[in-house]
Image (cartoon, rainbow over all chains, first blue to last red):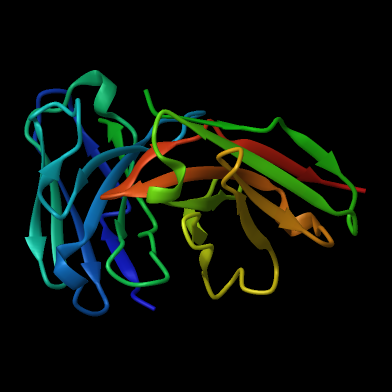
Length: 108
Length: 116
């Protein structure tokens, strides 16, 4: 089973700032099958990026994913008020399709 | 438009059985994996398992193998998650999600509360 470790646990930033979220895998993720999700309170998760760097339909271009192998990053170039939420990475290259434990992006 | 509509909230007693559902529409049900994710109160997402309705191939996460059963009825484009004997620790929100590239569409969630 691939274990995904996200850091930091909490990121305190102001609107307009840049957010950099990390996801590290315990072994290489097959074909960079790594996705990022956003979850707001009381809502289902929403797919942001897949295949490490492809944006899902309708996702603003301030969200970008990068990385390969065992190290992946989600960058939010300029935080908007609606971006304060919890973010999860997930690998779907092998079963079980594990999630990271999440990074909370909160308003500073 | 792709939609996943889950069954309503459930309140059960320990030891009772339960089957929740996820009805898919707007795409060919047999062509995509569909899976289940648990979220315990105040906690993160846990991948439970996944089924390919086209051939009923099923994969379970290690923590859920033997604890739940995932199934699908392709005649009505519906996936299911069931328990034979619920425990208080099964109290959680359960989401179904279609798996294309990543989990691209999600149901609204089914809240399951298990309490005596």
